[in-house]
Length: 128
Image (cartoon, rainbow, N blue to C red):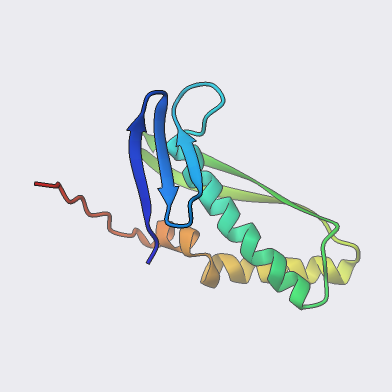
């Protein structure tokens, strides 16, 4: 089970996990918005899973990055999220391994992408 506490602050909102990490959110300059954090979660989940699995197969990529974009279906709903990898494999074999791993990660291993695709229920509990 994952846990994050979010609360309002003087200059936005802050999210804290149980390991002490913090992220400040706001629509202000220099801050991540909640939508941008969702995109970061999708990209982070994919790339942080692809990297070790590719390396375990003997292929460390010279460069591994990703751009994550969203397309809106309306003012409060996303139609799609796209992860575009930017990789520099040292060999053609490394590219083949990366491509196979990246597809498998997307289909089976990235909890964030899979949850978005499957339409995970979000429950709201109002404190008394």
